[in-house]
Length: 209
Image 1 (cartoon, one colour):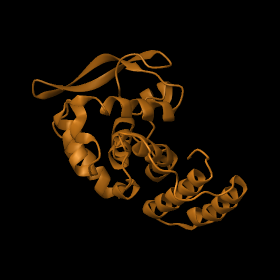
Image 2 (cartoon, helix red, strand yellow):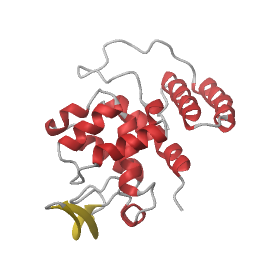
Image 3 (cartoon, one colour):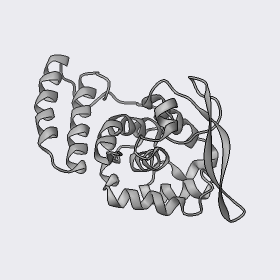
């Protein structure tokens, strides 16, 4: 049984960190992962950790499965070879690498709705309703709340971090924030606690989660 909120909370930290690195909106990545993997329950995701239906050979090889494509005005089933990954984070990172291709230029550093329309127009999927389905997921599950406001600088960082704290203090603050995460009743609220915790980790030079 799919668990949308649990799925979102599981992938949100990696997706948000990835947006800061690449400019791919977190709302788009989460919506695509949810749609393509049926909230992490599809056979492709369970067998190959492939969240996005990406075809070809991946870091862990490949797997051949049946897929639904839209051809000549109708949906048809056909076999295809999909990428296999060692984990979901690897799948998320590979998805962002693909969307940094010039073909998907309209996806980067924009809002979720525009990114959904751009990824569909660039031919990511054959489904003519692909953008509408992504936007509905963004609206229904308030996925825009996961988008990061800070975009990556193509020239790289030129100034030091605005503040720094010790790793020990960072761990204490994250524990306090964790209590707030469990108390939050909405995905947007939990996303905010995730964001704050990752800001604290970054200030201490620790990796985000």
